[in-house]
Length: 287
Image (cartoon, rainbow, N blue to C red; front, top):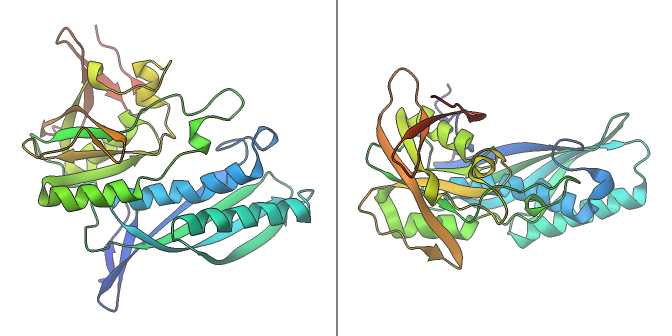
């Protein structure tokens, strides 16, 4: 890895050193039929998600966004008016978060709408907070509520997600060195916490009764649905973590238990004290 690369693959963002400062970079794609359903979703909400899901990565590093570029492949029948509406909305959402859309590329093709956004950020003197810092004894927290982000028509909270930029920086400021690791919850708590475990070489135990499920959602969905765009972080067991910040709940959902064995694992502790393994895509039941 070149010396100017200060953070390589494996985290929410990569980083390169420029003139003595780190520049954080993240990129995400948004595909019709995968991340939204265009026939059921207003263009301004598609535009919002295209920007916000990248900003959630910035939040996971306790960073501060500085700008973005976008590459969009439009279906040939998309039309100029709809294209203008999409790009205007993307620019407006980006500006809401002080992350101006400064350029990009547009192409036409014979496939569904595809939006690729790259966001640049700076650590803002607070990090970046990585996935690799969790240690045995840490408490595990999540922000907000989990599960049920999608409905059958492709709508739901995933289209209105709020990137936890301010909250993440406030956590980094208030907890300091007690904040050990963080990740954004885009693939579900089970899988994303698993990334922390892999990068930190630890195991994690989640308490079933503590997981904050969105209304009408069971624990299994809260663990595996994904696209919540909340944060999961670990902090020293004696760190003073408030129950909420700026009206957003912070819930302790488990502990980092020990250094991992052959394969880092995430498991559940049920109310009766029994334990249950979770794989990276769902639950693994053991009798």
